Figure 1 (tube, rainbow, N blue to C red):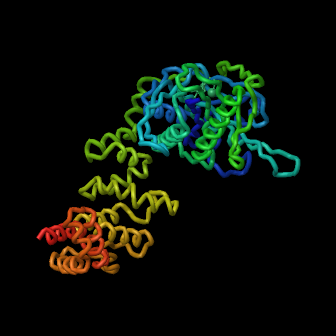
Figure 2: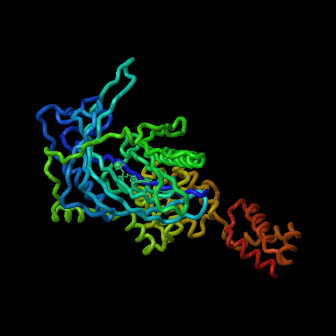
Figure 3: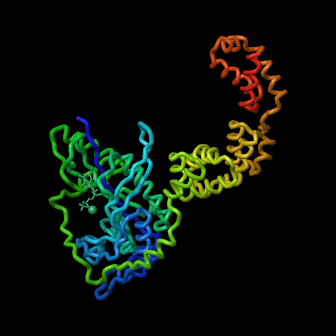
Length: 482
Ligand code: ADP
Ligand code: MG
């Protein structure tokens, strides 16, 4: 049987405020346990929460960026459950009336098989809430510790409609969402520190069936790799289970990256009743027209807006424009480069090709690239003015990357890569190659186009890669036709 995969994601994004959502304690990471837990975070009797408007403003920015409705009035609710790292006995969240409603996000999916395609995903909602503390195990034999530094950290929980249809789509969405919140400056997006955690709801159904299958929710996936692997595992598990005559039980599951499998945590039967109700300690959150307008005015150009601009002003393809707007860093690098290079497409190719490969291989962020946009611009200029051929340019790039120098012209000189564009010199080599390769010559003259490649290769080799390939081609054809 053919199966269709259905996925909806719930993502917890830690907001980039200085202090907590309902108290003045710092949220900076790395502090001693409980050094950043004030009386509100400890839930001492008599304390009251005070809303951090910086967190609200970040949620508003997100809502505006995805074309959602930013609610004029939203409500904070208490989500009641008992756990040692939750001293109040409830988490303050938003339930019935979230601050951000609806919206959509478009992104490019690059499947392992088949062509890349664009997908537009509808978002259900995004709501503000506080994070819980942490239980820390294994510090001392038989004891667990509680660290409340994280308690009260502001989170935006972003929920999608069940419209994702593969692990690849889920990861493409998560990457785009991550890039967006960092781009907007509303989160540091530091995944190692849990700034961006996804819960994946996964179900399968026979192709053609209207109703959704029973879903499982995999909690707390904090890397794109885990997200991909966990979903793929869960899909396989559900399909095998059903094909063997079993039934999927709605449950919350945990992903174990060491074993690459998901394990059941709790089923729907023992799922908690949170007894949500409006928090009487907090007023409804009212967002005035004026405030929303103010935030709107301060919005940066968005990735998709820049994408459109790169397509219309620079004539880039949708694919290229999407790749160049995957992060603020890539976009800034490309814009700085394109300012200094006439041919915007060739500039794009260098960023997505040679530069990306080098960055990936050395695991360097583009902001710290040893080859700056100005230096790369100079190198590309030397290709465009025929001083270098592509092969030579790659050699110079490698030298720049290895910090063998930072002056492009000096490196070209030093490495002896200056392209031979002197027609006389090339003609001389071409004559020799024609004389020494009678078989290729005969084949070409007999109509075998491919034989020319062999001859071009010979000329390039004889010139130590320095001949201008375009010229070589031209001269060869002219001589062979004579
Ligand atoms: P809950 O209240 O249990 O969290 P929601 O209705 O809010 O459930 O849905 C949570 C997430 O699960 C959403 O992202 C939604 O798109 C997704 N979802 C709902 N039903 C399914 C399903 N059958 N298969 C996959 N994902 C689903
Ligand atoms: Mg939910």
